[in-house]
Length: 510
Image (cartoon, rainbow, N blue to C red; front, top):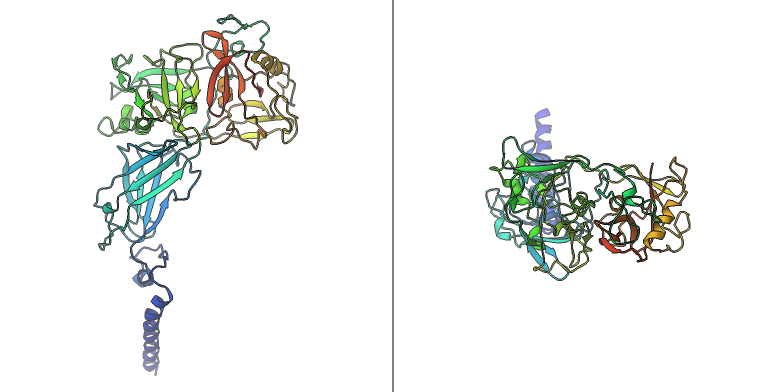
């Protein structure tokens, strides 16, 4: 009796299975994409039978960043690697050679950018070898840039012989990189009295200038050039404050004093990948034994400017033979025809000219990141002041002339350099111990709260609402010339005559 019941049950189940086998394809046409079970096929082939049955014809499943992605972070991971992923609906052949074509918008057209040194690696998302991971040689995506990449269809085939039907192409935008680090003194030790040249501080009638504050908020500190113990021809300089390690020499130069070779000048399109070759040096061990070299961001490159020197405006003993010229920083100004540069003739930074023209050239200095990246951490103190928890600086929430309310209502007031210095020097605001010790911030301090972006002055409007679109004055004058002061907005920092009108936002230490 039991044998009969068992046979009857198995017969019914077999009949039901046949019905399911033929009914399901009718319910789910072949164009429908259904992700299979993530279980490994070796665990239970019966479970995977239906996903295989329902799987559509070979097709691209997902690409990261997505085609409609906006505000993609310029880096992902620690250290920040510019990664892309492509996932397919079938297991793929891994013996084919892959190549990446990358282009970046120059404000008019997409320009090709080299990707020598890009790595490809297959991994499993749902099936073995269904995801291609692309580790781009730039290491970081450039800031505020529109990027397009293409992978040829001919380089992809599934393990059962299906061909990728079309080239894989995606376009996406990146954001600015909001990394921050301790703020160094600018190096300026002299003051301006409104005349030609600089004088010993204090500058009468021009209170609380950059030069009045020595090693504020932190002293500058570099070590190098230092040769590697094994790769003795490799020299680096480390910034002891930020933790950034720099190649001591400008690209094209080498040696302990950077006296060998000639400093390379490249167009913007070639600067993005200009440091990638260092990652393959020393038979793959990387220059100085490091394999994360890249073009620096604007905030990183400006952090080594010294306003105590001119032509070049840098600590020359630590960065020998630096050219008093422009150097490329990674990123674009509002995805436009302007690429960011830092000018080591006098320390200015800019994105103010149409320099992504395939003709304008600048130098390259490569950087290697520390293992961790710090992000800004602001706190509204509820008393008209904002604390930056990373730098230890306290900021005036509202611009000069605005009402000290939650939205900083009203218009900002402008004034010449002397009046902005005087305004901040006389400000009393907040409940902290230094509530009466405000000053016009130096250029490095102002850099610490401004980040590359696509709108306005690129401050965090949650903490600094209604920020003026005009330039803001800083307390730093141009090296060796007291008739020009540095002024800052979202496009960069420039020098202008002391009589030019700008607004102000004051700073103090906690």
